[in-house]
Length: 352
Image 1 (cartoon, helix red, strand yellow):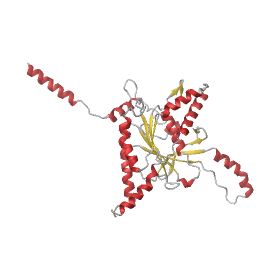
Image 2: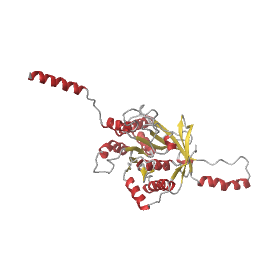
Image 3: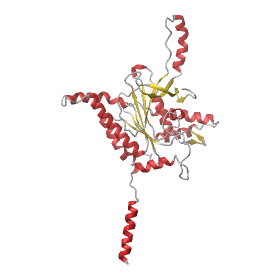
Image 4: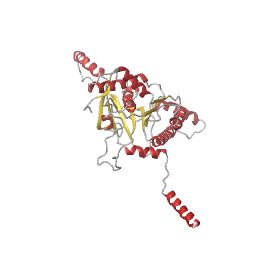
């Protein structure tokens, strides 16, 4: 009798073990994310929910609904002396990523997440991000007719800034090493306060910052390996980077955002060629200042003087355009315009 019981227990154990599916943390996080796209009874909604990547409707309209990855590309620095607006748009994305969904029952369109930022050129400004966040809060509360408690708002901003984790690698090797060490850092609750928040994005600003160093190392290696080429080395560097990002974004069910200058004013291709894995949905967005029309041919001095004030007014507005890149720098008709001011960044409603 005991033998039969033991045999039955063994078979039952084997059957149960066979029904167990192995998975890792990435699978768990993915399943949790998918719950946001289903009803409480477990059935899917008839129509897909609107994209909620950034909480910026004009931007979200350009992106796939689930876990988008972005390349923000601007013209070369020589194209315009006063900047392209790429960093300002990034500040707006980061602000929405870490702000709460609402405040005093007023929607902020925040994602209540944490964000990892790589800033190799030390361009990122915490004070500028705080100003953008404060501008969002002021606008939403004023529109709702709510009184502003400055101390409360500053406390909220200070709390949100704790969830922006900034790394400043000084070399390509250091950046790759830091990316590899991210899981260890993020799972160590003694090193940060974002354990209770999901990772919204991993942002690599100025990913082209190390292109010249990579090329320089190539020239040195060519002395020892004559068959190596600059293009091969850049391709290898790109593969290393995108492979790491693919692994991390899968593990944490988050997005990747890379910013770069293009090689020419019209191509809108990153200076470091990026070879993404096929299962990553990457959207390339071009960002540049809205240009001022050139003077007409044979315009007189008097006419030029008359138009100067109007032209300066256009420039002083700080208007920038963003659109989805199709092919080599082409537009697909989808995009938006945003303004950059002393205190914040605002998307123009209905502008394309």
